[in-house]
Image (cartoon, rainbow, N blue to C red; front, side):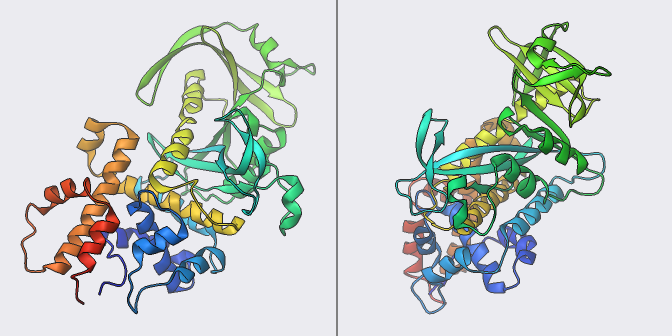
Length: 424
């Protein structure tokens, strides 16, 4: 009988890049099968559901306990895996000297029905506009050109629960800088810009990122005080921006044109130093932004701000396609490890699908492309299974037929029908 899911050759080859994160080959093996299950699953992303999707009832199959251990007790670091993840992205996109990398920072709410999970508290859920029981996750995604993928996530633990952990309490801004920005290593000669909303702004955090050799682009709250260069007095940024001259500018982001009235000026912020501020007006709204790169134009800064919305797409699609918020693990470390596997699953199918340039151009939307990529992965897996079932049968033309069958059957029902007749 077939012990575990047969993995398509490209997937085996891609995941070999992540083996250095594991000192034990059994954990590297678990990574392969769990990421495979995340890609193939449609609704059951619990550890129990994933293990059922990749284990078979024979002597060689791994038990649910083995996968529990992988998340809870095994010796490996989600941060180390995230760095290998980033290196894989940089290699695929050939990032090197002179290339710009964006690191978007945000957070998202994952609702829970009970308080058994680490870090669960009544926290603000922006979707519902009220506090609810759940976890708050500080998230990030990497972007190079128009391509973006999730990078690393960390759980925020409220201060009154921090005593349950060996680590000191950290604000979301501290988690973002210390646990997400700082560990990231770039290819030689590449430049990083960290992009976030006003909730993550802090003079000390911006200065820390600058001291690491990176730039920051972020939104500023209207009451933030700035001063013209070379003077000692300060005033609110909205009051200062009202004195500037505005001009109409059109930018194109995510395939859409947007027109703003904008003005910009180099100013100083205490404990940060000189920055360029940009004020943008639409019919009923004025917003203010900051860039530590003084050489960027106002239009370029607005483009980076608009790109930040890609991380919202990461939240939505990674949950819909790979079960990002649907974990049923209790420990903080286990949850953060699970999230890293979700991010890895997204990245692998994204880069597998990037080779199909015509499909990307014709079909457009990310959600559709991820569906197609998951389907393509399943087709390759089924071809492997078909070859095992009937190794002498011709496979010419089988791909398109299997694409049609995938839409009619779930992975588990197809797999179980194959497994019933497979003999090793």
